[in-house]
Image (cartoon, rainbow, N blue to C red; front, top):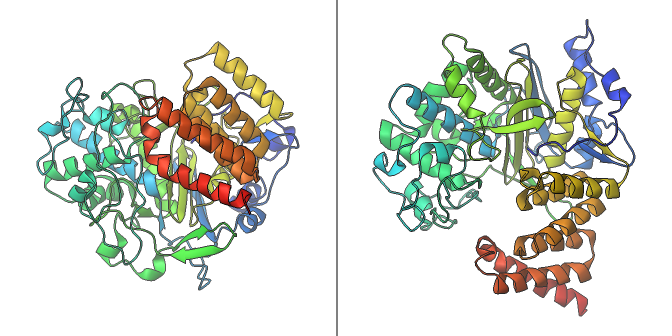
Length: 516
C-alpha cells in the first residue's frame, strides 16, 4: 500500500457525515460502505461512488469484504460471481488466492520459532539451510543474509515476484525455483547487493525463508501454517494448497484477467510451487483474513495465548533499515496514525488487508481480478470513512499542477523521504494511472525523469504512460531513451537489464505502427 500524500485542501464534510452513528446496524454500515467509495487521491472534482457501479465499470467478476470492529468480525459480504463462465456466486465460503499476503503467515511462523528459541533473527541463514545454501559472492562476504533481512526485504536478494504456473503447466520444486532451473520460469534467486544496505521487495527472499522453515522443522510449510497460524487464529477455511487438500472445487474462486480489448479471461488460479508457496499461494476467505488481523491485534495487546508475544508482534510492524517494511508487515502512515497492512496481486487475483495496531479495527478485501488495484484503494477509503478511522482520509488537489508543486516542495524539504525517492515517485505515478489521472501520472513520471536523469526505468515508466494515453511519438521517444541510458549507464541500470527485451519489442511495435 502506498503511504499517504499530504492534503492541500480540507477533507469533504460530506465524508464525515457518512461516519458511523450510535444505533447504526450492520446493514446501515454496509450501505454506507457500498455508497462511500472514493479515490484516495482526488484531483479536481470531488465525488463518491457506488460499489456495484464500480464493479461493473472495472469488469470485476466478484469480491469479498470483511470488516473488523472492537476486535471482532463485524460483518462480511460477497459480491458478484466466483466464476464468470458459470455465474456461480461469491459466498462467505469462497476461497480467493491472496498472493503476497501469504508472506505474513511465514513471518508469524518465523517469529514464533524465534520466540521459542529455535531461531535467531540475526544469524546467517546458511547455518540453518540444509538442502540448499545462499551462494556466497562479493556482496554476501561483506554482510550475511539473516532472517531479519529476509522478513523485511533488506537481504539484497533478487526476484521481486513470480508469474506462477497455469493449469497443465509443469510446477517446479522449491529447489528448482531457487536456482531458476526448468520448469521454473524465474531467474535464480541470488544476492546482488550488500545485505542490510536497503529495502527491495523480494519474493525470492521469502522462498528462501520457506525452505529454511521446512529444513529446520522437517515439516512442510502447509502444516506449519495450520499449526502456528490458522488454528490459533480460527482461520478454519484457509489453505496453502487447495489441490493438495482436495478442497471442493465449488468453494474456490476462478481467476480473471482483462485483455487489451476489455474481454475477461477465466482460469484456475496459478500454482507456484509443488506443495504450495509461502511467497504467494495462500487461499483464504475475507472472514478468515479478518480473523488474522484480530489475532495480530490481540498479540499486540498482549492477550494471553496469542499467536505471538507483544514484543514479536510489534517487531512485525517496526520498519527496518529505513524501509517501509517491518518483520512481515508493511507500515502505512496516515498523518500521525500508523497501520499494519499488506497487499497481494497474482495473475487473476488482488487482495488487501489493513489493521489498526491498538484500536481493534480493520478490514480485508479480496477480488478475483488482477485489474482491481483502484478498487482496493476506493474500498479502503469507503470503510475508513464509514467507520471514522483515524488518519485515513482522501487527499484533495485542485489540479495536477498543485500535486506536482507539492512533490517538488516536499522533495526539497525531505530529500531522503522514500515517498519522493525514485521508487516512491514511480509507485505514485502508477497509482495515479490506476486511479484514472493520466495527465497527473505523466507529470509525476516526468518529474522522476528530471530528478533521476540516468535512470532507464524512469524513462520506461514515462514511455508506458504515454503509450496508455495513445501518444505513440512520446512513447517511442522515452522507450528509446531508456535503452540509450541502459547502454550509457549500465552499472546504474543493472536492474533494468531484464526489461531490455520488452522495451525493444515495444519500440519495434511502435515503429511498425508509425510506418503504416
